[in-house]
Structures are given as C-alpha cells and as structure tokens.
Length: 276
Image (cartoon, rainbow, N blue to C red; front, top):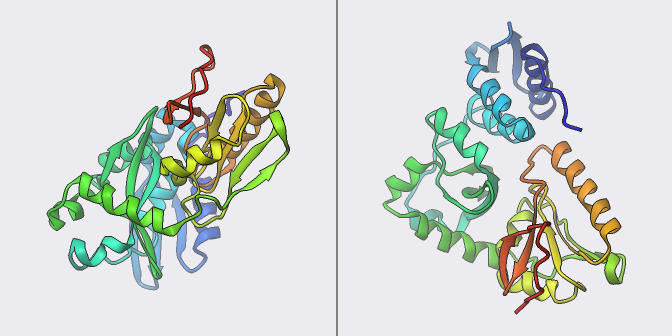
C-alpha cells in the first residue's frame, strides 16, 4: 500500500529532524510551512525555501529521501568548496553513481544541473567527486569548465569503479533456487557495481534459472533466481522495504541479463536465460 503524502508541515518537520540528526553542528529551524532558517555558523543566517522541493516530492513521493538528501547537501549544509583544478587533476576521484531521474530533474529546476547521462528505466548515471574530505555531485557547469564530455567522465568513472574492486566481494544467502548473492560493502558504490558487466555476468552464472537483479538503494545490490515464485515475491517485498526506508533510494524495479546485457525485467514475459 502506498504511503500517504506528507503535509507541508509534516514535510518541513521531517527535513528539519533529518538535518539535525545528520548535522547537529548546524542550526536549522522551520519558518512556517515553506521556509527554513539555516545558521551554519553563528551570525551567518540565511533563509531557504522548501516550495520547489515539496512540489518535486509531490510528483515523485517515493524519491522523498533522495530529493531531501540532495537539497540538504546543496542548500542547507555548509557549502563545500567548488571543485578546483583541472579534469586531469580530478579524474582519479570521479566515480559513477546510479540515481533516479527525479534527482536530476530537481537539481535542474534549482539551477544546479548535474553532470549525468541517461541510463534505463527511470535511472541515470551521475558523477561524483569522491575525496577524503568530501563527497559531492559534479555539476554540469564544472564538467563544461573542464572542457570534457559525458563520455570522458564516464570513461574515467568506470576505470575508477573497476579499480575500486568489489566485483567478487559479495556474500551468499541460501542455496539453489533460494540463492541470493549480495553486495553490501557500504562504500557508497554497491548499487553502481551493476555497471561492471563482466563481474555481474560471472556472478549471474552461479544463479540457477533466470537471474533477477535489484538495486533498491545506493548500498545494496542483489542477484537471485526466478525459479520459485514465492521466493521472488518475498525478495520483491524486501527490496520494496529497502527502497522505501533508505536515505538514498534508487528503484524498486528489477533487472535481468539477456545475452549478457542488463535489461529491465519484464515479469509478464519470462525471458530466456542467456548469460555470457
């Protein structure tokens, strides 16, 4: 059953509570239904509107926490320094992040368009700068200032993801048709490992029947079999719960491999198993 939409006041309280939990060093106070008073340092106050964020939430309520996260990082928390240096100086720290397109749309409306490319089934690949002192989405303007294209960004991001490893760093739950292979390293890129085709296909070869793949949130990737309908229903429910409860949700949809290629799973048309 879908959750009821939060009212404007409930939405404001929710985002204030999250900000206070994540950044107790910053003063955040509600001002009516649509405004926040933000004081990152004593004497430095600013007022931030929630109106556009609330409208984005109304249009995509399941992406609530992801939208809130982007809003808090970009407009409420102490602003991180802009990316400095050239593309070559930063390329070793560029990583890919699978995100819902609702996040891109929100950032675009807020004039903070992200460097990203379309992916599939309501998803996109955004690029982040992952350094010891910061983790931040790379904005399109930064990419343009670097004089590079999305293709250049993707090439570097995939090289870095490959070097990060974790292709075989999964654990197994159950056996046979009740087997599930889970990536849960919590390094921020578990779901992004769905992009590692060779590793994904190698793991899928261990799963009997058609392989089903879930990435409900940033920190979870799972492969499991479609042979037992009851087990599939149980896994669907778990993935739905993970999607709805996580601060960085991605999708509750399933994917599969056809001819070694990642595809959205069509539950109404059981696909023939073809794994390279």
